[in-house]
Image (cartoon, rainbow, N blue to C red; front, side, top):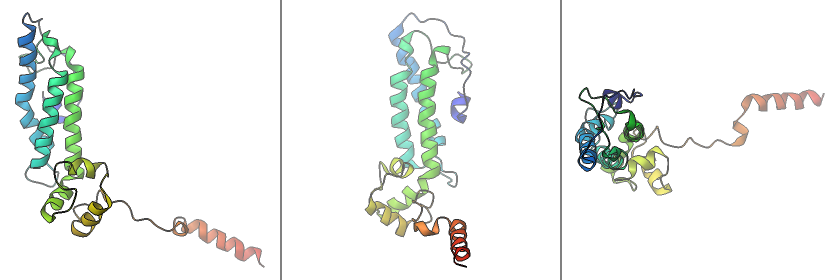
Length: 188
């Protein structure tokens, strides 16, 4: 469980025995993981500069984490997902990857987009709200939202703002200087 919390790779070494009540075991596997989901999401949704987790990201994480647990972590009820020592069962590789992916995505959004989305919400910019973190992280905001974020939340959104376009003549000043020098030499 600690490797899932920290984002490290897991060694699947749980000592588990086959279950006889597959329906109950599948439900127990999902329930076990959902019970720790809130704690894991609180940690993943905490921006590096923030004291508290981003509440919008926590809610997003909990939804995605619960979906991943339901989709991939029942293990068809064949074995318990975690043993008494908190180690994942060898059959839980796909489950672990999906849960880890959710937590890593949320952590990345907290790092890249949280300050920007919190500012956007406070300033009433379009694009704030439920999808803001994903849109900002993937730079998929519309022109109106970008303009608002640029003018209202410039510093908070500096990580995600597109780089200013420079004229092509300014892209390679050293090359331009050599070309001008070559033209000057050729005219002598």
